[in-house]
Length: 197
Image (cartoon, rainbow, N blue to C red; front, side, top):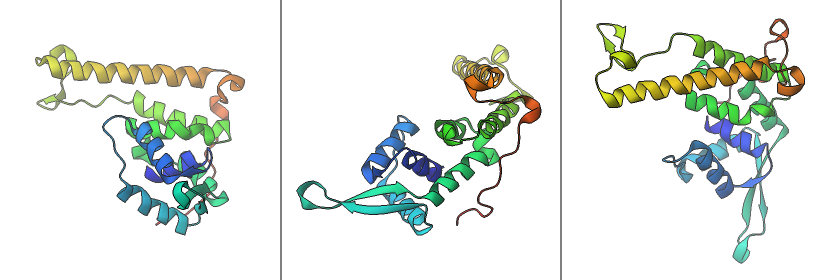
């Protein structure tokens, strides 16, 4: 997901490393902290792959600062990551929210819709349970622990809210939500057949 975050934010405009790191930490939310030891090696890999470039520009006190900018190949890679997310990126809510943060970068409304429909399909499957009794999922109505009961209710409410939002977006007219009728939703076209090392 770090590659997606880097390319996603750089697709919005050039950034310095500290600005990019701040934006990623803000996206990840409280309690998350992307270290320089994680970010800068990832930037080096993406630069080596030709997905971004670093240029020097004057900084405070005469020290040059590195400005990061996405390349055309980086934009194509970003579109590929958005159009063909891994199953875990669709199934995991935190990972899906990262996809959602940059989904508007996909220029084709039908491709955006295909990603949203995949997520909706996952949410329409029976919800996994946190606790089981003899193999049967324990629901909030049968959970004796009030804190576990709260946990189950919070997750169920979040799931319902997400399903409602997805259904609303997908039902909106194409000019409002950028969607197409069910029968016309194409698969995302391949852009990069080989994943990066």
